[in-house]
Amino acid sequence: MLEKADTLTRLRTRGAVLARRAEVVIDLNYVGMVVATLFFALSVTPSLVPRDWLFQGLISGVNAALGYGLGCLLEWGFRSWIRPRLTRIPPAPTWVLYAVKTAVLVTAGLTAALMLVQSARWQREITALMGMEGTTTPAYLRTGLLSLVIGVVVVAVYRTVREMVLFLARHLNRWVRVPRELAPAVGALVLVVVATTIFNGVATRAFFAVANSAFSVRNDHTSPNAVQPQLPQRSGSPDSFAAWDTLGFEGRWFVSQGPTASRIAAVTGRPAREPIRAYVGLESAEGAETQAELAVRELDRAGAFDRKVLVVATSTGTGWVNSMAAGAIEYMYGGDSAILATQYSYLPSVLSFLADKSKAASAGRQIFDAVYQRWSREPVEGRPKLFVYGESLGSQGSEEAFTGLADLRGKVDGALWVGPPNSNRLWKQIVDRRDPGSPEVLPVYADGLVVRFAADAPDLAVPGPEWQSPRIAYLQHASDPIVWWSPDLIFSRPDWLAEPRGSDVSSQMRWAPFITFWQVTADLTNAQGVSDGHGHRYGSLVVDAWAAIAQPAGWTPELAERVRFQLESAEDFERATK
Image 1 (cartoon, rainbow, N blue to C red):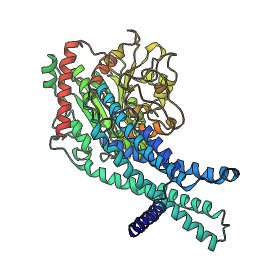
Image 2: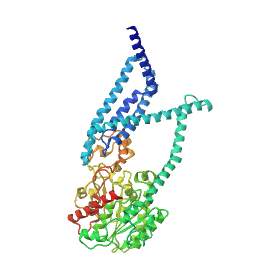
Image 3: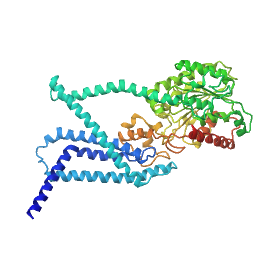
Image 4: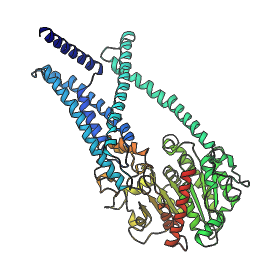
C-alpha cells in the first residue's frame, strides 16, 4: 500500500511539474484570453455578406489574436501601475489562481462554441435574405479550430518580434550605452523604423512589381472565345489604330463580344446599325495623354461622332467593362451608339485601389477631357448624346473628370455609376447633403430632381416622376462592402448602421470599434460571392438604370424583357467561357 501511495505521489508531483513547465512554455496570458474570447465572439456576429467556415475562421483567428494582444497590454498596465499601489491586498493562494485559470479556459471554450452555434444561425439568416443556400451548424463549428490555429500563429509571430526587440535592447544597452530602462523602447523604435522603411520602400515596390508582372501575364493571354474582329467599327480590327495584340485580355474580350447589327435587329424587330466599340489598352500607347489622343482618333476613325449616343466608360483595374452595361445601350439605340473604354492598370480593382488609385483618376479625367473637347467641336444639333459610365473603381475614375455636380451636368447628357467606393469624392458630397430623413443606404438628394440612388428598379422612380435631364444615377446595395468600407468605421458608427437597415442586411449586425472595420474589410474580398441583386452584384439593374437615364425612344416593358434575356444569356456565357 505504501509503495502504491508513493507511486501516486510521484505521479502527481511529476504531473504538477510537467503542467508548470507547459504553462511556462505556453506562457498564456489569461487576461489576454478573456479579451481574445470577446473579440472572437464579436467577429462571428453578422456582417454585410455571408461567410463560409473557412473564411470566417481566418477572420476570427486574426481578430482573436488582436484581442489577445490588447488583453496582454491591459494586464501589463495593471501589473506595472495599479498592482504596486494595492499593498493591502494579499496574494491569492495557488489553488485559487489555478481555479481561476481553469475557469477562464473552460468559459472561453464554451463561449466560443455557443457563439459559433449562434453565428451559424445568423449566416443562414443572411443567406436567406440573399436567396442563397445556408450553412449547417456542424460544418460551421470547424471555424473554431481554424481560428485557434490562426490565432496561435499570429501570437507566435508577435512573440518572435518581441524577442527581437529584447535582443536589440540588450545590445543597445551593452554597446551603445543606452540606459536599461530606455533600451526596450529604443529597440522597438529601431525595429519599427527599419520595418516601415522596408515595407514602404523595397517590400512595397517589390510586391506591386511582382503583382504587375503576374497579372501582366494574364493580360497577354487571350480567351479562346475572343476572336479578332474584322468590322471597322471595332478596335483591334485590321482598320483600327489600336492593334489587336495591344488591347490586353479584357480589351480583346470587350471588342470581340457584344451584339451585332443583325442580332439587335432580330431582338428589337427594328433596323439596326453596327455598334462601335473602341478600346485602348496599356500597350496601345505609352502614357495616359497618348492613350487619350489615340482614343479620340479611334472614335473619329469609326465615325463615333455621327452616332446618336456616345458613352465614355471608365474601366476597373484590369480594364474590365461590364458587358451588360455596354450591351444595354447598344440594344436601346439600335446599334446607333459608340462606347469607349481604356485600360490603366494590370491589377485587379482591390490592388489597383491601393497602388494605382491615382492612375484611375488621371485616366478618367484625361480620357473624358480629350473626348469632350473633340465632341464639343461638333454642331450642337448633330452631335451624339454624351454619357459617362463607371463601376466600382471605374466610377471613382469617372467622377474625377468633373469638379462638381454643376460641372458634370454642364458637360454630359447623363451619368451612371455602379457600386461606388465610399471614397468617391462627388458621391460623398451628395450623400452627405441628402435630404433630411432619407437613409444613407438609399438617400434622396434635392427631391430626386437631378440625382437618384437605386438598389432595385422601382427605386429609380422615387421620390416622384419629375427627374430633370441630364439624369445622374448611382446604383448601390445596402450589402455592398465596396460602397460602405471606410477607415471611419474604426472609431465611429456609420449612418447606415444607425438608421433602419437595408432589406438584405441582417437586423443583428451591430457596430463595434475596430471590429466592424475589420469585418467589412474582410467582406471586400467576398463582395461578389453572392447572388445577383446583393453585395457587389448588380446584374440586369443596369438595364433599368440606362433606360431611365438615356430615355431611348420606343422602349417598352416587353422590349426590356427581351433585351434583358439576351444580356443575361451573354453574361452567363462570359462567366462560363471567358
